Amino acid sequence: IGGLTNRFNGIEIPGLIRLNLNGTRDSLFPKENTKISSANYFADLVVLSDGKILISGSLNADVRPNSYRFVTNLLCYDSTGKLDSSFIPGYGMTNESYNILVYDNSSIFLTGAFTTYQLNGRNGLVKIDNKGNIDSIFYTGYGFNGEGAYCIINQITPTNNNSYFIGGYFTRYKGFSNNFIIKILSDGQIDTSFISGTNLTSQVDDIIIQSDGKIIVLGFSTHFKYDTVSQIIRLMPSG
Image (cartoon, rainbow, N blue to C red; front, side, top):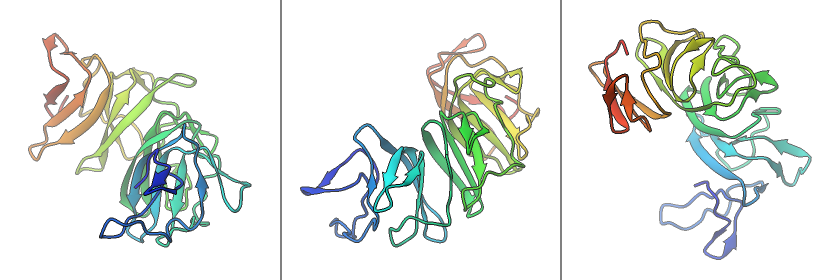
């Protein structure tokens, strides 16, 4: 469990705890205390197939007892609760990371409000391996809204043909108008089989693909093209 909590049953905790099956605290986890201030938070937590625990959020923190180890918005523990020394995100993200999507231990996607990862331009979306290294094949760069522009990527949803639906707060991708939703290929290029253009009017928070290929979109949009909608809409596979 991760969050803003700093106490459990009167005992000070670092915002991250593991509970036993009977609801009591596992006092052996985590083994290294991560000093998280009350202004910071954990956004997502994923257990990988090898038992490692990947955590995203606003995690500008020093890691004790080695206080010189400074982590930025991404942490990885092994199954015993010790920080994984083989996972090195380096400078990590420049701003908070929200969601983690894992296909296997070597395909990890991070979404958020960041603009770089390990000093490489990545607006809101990056793919890394299980060591924290950036995947250069999946290249989105500053594509969402452009270099220096603000954007938020809230959701990445995989399809069954090795492409991805991306939702969030953005209006352009690699120079093309795409309001708040886009479909991209495994190399980060636009999948032109789905064209929504500027039809949505506000940010997308979640994307669900039905078995028939239709796409349910949840967010804050009140219109789609000329039609009034109520923050939820279903799109055809073509957009």
